[in-house]
Image 1: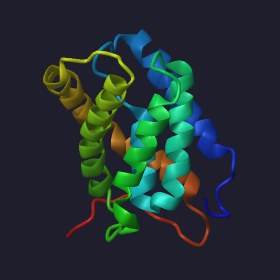
Image 2: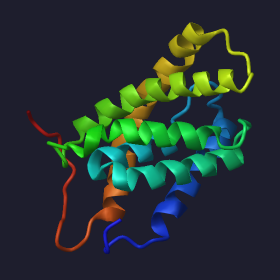
Image 3: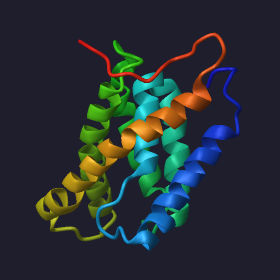
Length: 175
């Protein structure tokens, strides 16, 4: 994190995302398909800031989700750290201010997250013989919803990471 970012804002944001994702959104009526705000945040951080800063976000976000979800503790932390590393693409970011790159990465990362989660759950002895059904009926719609929520999450994340010397405006980039 840069000096301009207050240390308490990222954990607070991830905690709020985890609570909203795990309790508020299902209570409103989204049962199967709902946005994964923590995944959105971690992937956006990885794309815009690189692995060095994204890995702690993945760990923090995963721990917060582990606390409020029914999965074995540590599962989502492991999965989000792996996704953060993969989404950072070796810290190469040719388009740091382009909104389309996080959107595309969030879409792909949603599938990567689901596959890794299914593998980890299977390795823990939790049966999941419905891989293709899960990817088709849950993960694909979730990926679309995640892409739809990406501009809002991107704006929030960029808002609390901007400082006076590097004002970055959200825009659609060009190749």
